[in-house]
Each structure stands twice: as C-alpha cells, then as structure tokens.
Image (tube, rainbow, N blue to C red; front, top):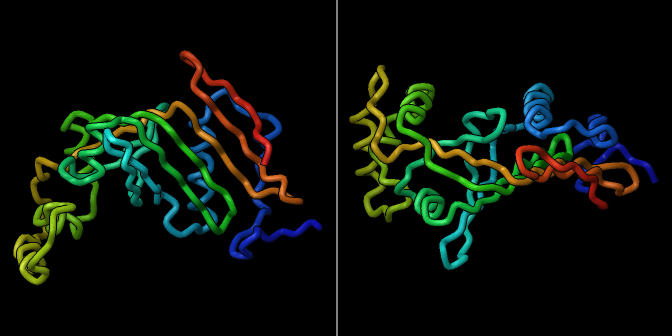
Length: 211
C-alpha cells in the first residue's frame, strides 16, 4: 500500500516532517524552514500564497499574492489598498491564506487578522520590487474596470524608466497576524500528517489532527 507518490502523482511524499512527532513550541521557525526547503527543492512559485478575504456581509473572494516577508510573528505582502482585497481587508480584518506546494505534497493553512502597515514599510518593499514592475503598478488602478487595454499599455510604457518610480499612494504593505497555522504533509497509507498551532495567550497550543 505504501507509495512514494502523492495522490495526484504530481508530487512526492519523501520530504521529511520530523516535527510532526516532535513539535516545536511555535510555528514561525517551522514555516521559515518549509519555505526555504521549497525553494531549495525547486518548487515553482514557493512564495505564492492564496489569500481569502470577505466583505462585512460575508461575501468571499480569493486570489494569489506573493509573500514579501516572514517575520517572527506575521506574514507581510503588498498590494493596492484600493483593490478589492485591500478594501475587504480594511473592512473585515479576518482572513485566511494558503501555501500549496504540489512538488512536495505539502501545504500550510493560515487564519488570522490583517492590518495595513505604516507607509515606511510600503516604501521599503516598493524599492525592493523589480524595476520592470513599477510602471504598470503606477499606471494601473487595480481592480477597476478596464476599457482601453492598449491605452493602459501605452501609459505604462511611457512611465518605464531605468530608475525606480515613486511609490503610488495606494500601494501598501499588509500584515497577517495568524491565530492558527496548520502544516499538512501527505503521509504514507493516507495518514496525512497535520500539525496545528493555535494562538493561546502569548504562546501557542500544538496538536496533531486526524487526516
């Protein structure tokens, strides 16, 4: 019954997860380790994170964003505050996020609260973005209806320079502070290894979940 392939045959289950039986006291060092390993093993888009937000009325939406920074207590990404995700995050701070790495048959599920950080953080992360991304980020009014495709393209091309452009006022950094993080690894005999960290006061409670 044992097989080193995952159910979809696109990934493998040979990646070790020793923390499943000997959990650490907090999840962020483990998450950093998984991210580094995903990069090392050649996972495509290891920093891609599905982000779910919702309106005050509970209408959900989801999209993929790129993790910009992982701190010892939060995850940070950037986006335009005027976009749908930005507006929903500001109106309803409860969010969920998911990393899924097909190549290693692993995923990390996160639930938490979100806040918009000070503009100095957005300035720093804007400067770290590739120059090739600046022009369209400045020209675009993210999530608004687009009538003239070529007009927007021309505007972005006219803005293209060999030096960084000023950060748009709407381009902000958002921080997710998790209240639970679940690590999931595809195990032998369908005994998937699930390790849940739940915020408890200033610390974390850790438990294994049945597959």
